[in-house]
Image 1 (spheres, helix red, strand yellow):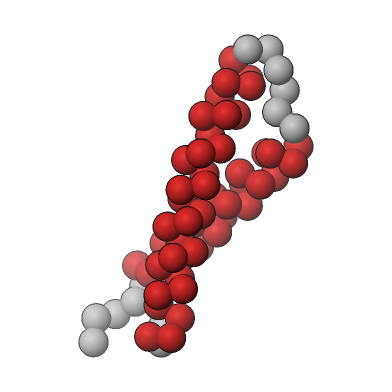
Image 2 (cartoon, one colour; image 1 turned 45 degrees about the horizontal axis):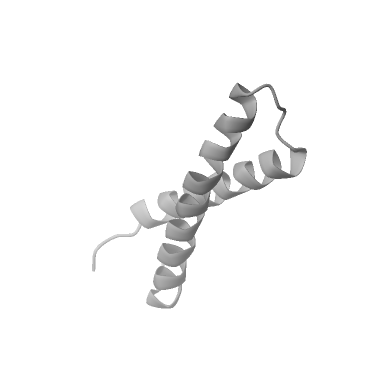
Length: 65
């Protein structure tokens, strides 16, 4: 990974995990109080988790130079 893409990858990964952390408690509250979460919320949480996993994977594969 080039230095040009390293910082944006770190920022995207951190933001996606932050947003997943904000959405998971909301999903927990909705499901435990008898409500069903909106498909948009489920899709957004899944997409953010996938972005976070992909970003983390890319960062872990970077070799120190």
